Image 1 (spheres, rainbow over the protein chains, first blue to last red):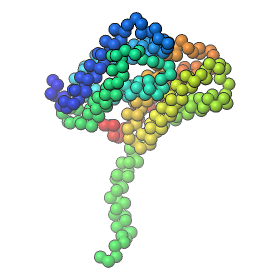
Image 2 (cartoon, rainbow over the protein chains, first blue to last red):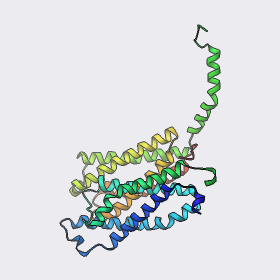
Image 3 (spheres, chains in turn blue, orange):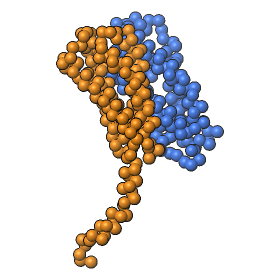
Image 4 (cartoon, rainbow over the protein chains, first blue to last red):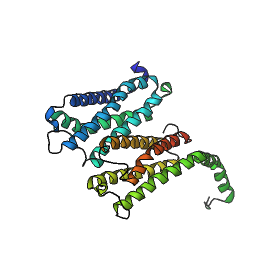
Length: 141
Length: 163
């Protein structure tokens, strides 16, 4: 089934990294300690966590629907991947260029690591979008 | 052989050879009236709110509430106005050159949806629609803008379907 799609190994690696990143994010959210909000900027941390919960509800739906779309139609998977990539980049730009005065992520090891490797997630999503857009064959459409 | 200037008949032959490609190009640029109306509406929306924001920032309009112009709000609106301006420019260029318009439309739609959700989550407890008329108009007209973006993407006639 996977071979029929004729996607490169890099695509599957990027997809695997994306899923691992998102699963780690869920773990980080679900295991937030009680003293997370006892900081000087508790309102900022609360805003960041609220935002992450809302974003994650959309991510959870995407994680479930993505494999279904990918194995059903590569044409729609392409648009879906581009939309998700645009959304991930929009969130990243918003966090670092727009909302940097409003939100503050908890200073926890796993959250810091996730923030550090976030650009790699964007690279993976961009790779998947480019591969689905530019490497096509008659068999796939 | 010494005279290398091309004569009128040769120029005519060259123009005739490229006539079909020029015709294809002209056809590819043609869009429906609905699409043209939608893209004009989209431009008016982005530009009008950019102008209102610029006036508010420059103290040329009464803000009704001083808390509206705190540094945090200004920083957020400033960055979003800039991003939306460049997205609007990219969509216009895509529509004019008939290249990548649907992609830019999709990216703009995703960005606007994301901004709407974030505003609802972060600023829901901080803003009152009665206190800030300009901001209220901006928020309440947002669904219209989202519908415009979706409709524009669907109404666009794309010759380059792969982009």
